Length: 116
Image (cartoon, rainbow, N blue to C red; front, top):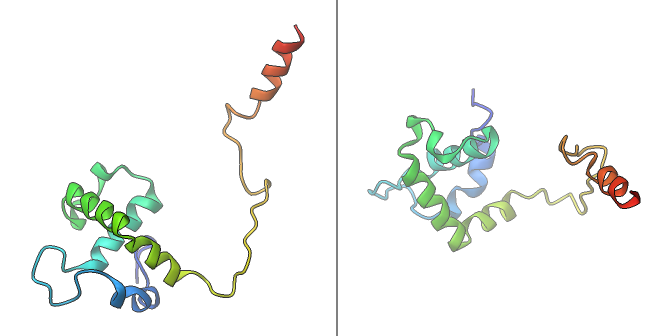
C-alpha cells in the first residue's frame, strides 16, 4: 500500500523511461522514484525543504536536483506525460477557492476610507 504522497505504479510506468539517470546508473541519483516521492512529499505536505524526512536523503541534495530538473525541463515533460488527455478545458469556480481571511474585507476598508 502506497502513501498518499508516493507515485503510483501506473504513474511510474508512464514516466520512468523519460527521466534522467536511468536504472543501472551507479551514482547517487540512481533512484528516480525515491526522488520523485520526496518532491511529492514536499508539494503535498507543504513542508519546507529543510524538513524533508531523512528517508529521502539530504534535503539540500534533493532540492538541488529538483532545481536542476526544473532548468532542464524535466518537470514539464513529466506533467505533459501525466496530463489527462480527455480533459480539454479545466474551469475553476470561485466557490471552490477561498479568500484569505485578511483579504476578504480589504475592498470594504478601501471604500470606507475613500468616502470619508
